[in-house]
Image 1 (tube, rainbow over the protein chains, first blue to last red):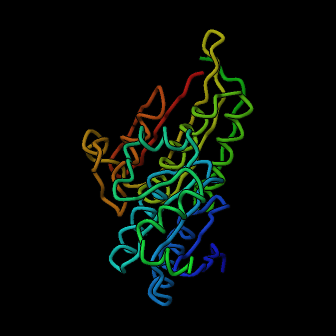
Image 2: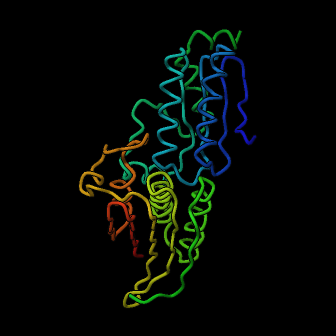
Image 3: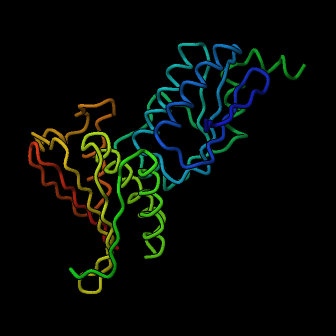
Length: 126
Length: 134
């Protein structure tokens, strides 16, 4: 079955969405990520959407759900790389993605995750 | 409003929703809509195609390049023979949902286009027509 890959990097999980997802695929990702957080005890999730050409209400809801479920499982979520046209459209559509942390690119997204989990920063550096 | 070209495609599965998005993107890009306008059109198409599938039990999308006194526009018609919308005003309100969505589909997509028209008859089906002008 078609799936979006989830990569593990230390305490964090990384996802890059590079395909135009149909709804089932988005739901599958939501389930897979939640399961993976639980299995690995990951403390952060980074979802890069820089290649996504649109975020409609379904994908927006998926991102909000992932962030909420991750939070309940003691993990932070950062969504990175949203294109400006996507951001404009999403807000006009009526979604502000309240509750979802965002960063402009993967690099600042990782920084944000480390900041939110300051204790792991020192662990990785030392 | 005169028609320049016209095409249609079925919306019977969630993969058809993806194909509908891609077709709208292609036509909007061919017509040289700005990137933001393309994104708005594709997003509106995605919402409406999903409505056709989930609430209308499937149907079709008609895509048409139109011309109004040399002003170009992209017109999309979503038609189904589903249960219809009993209260259109309620359905257009943000937060209104009968399914498992956010309730932003209809009201939200209306904000993303210039012209928006709903015809719906309970038991007969729904037709939603939208146009975005350049």
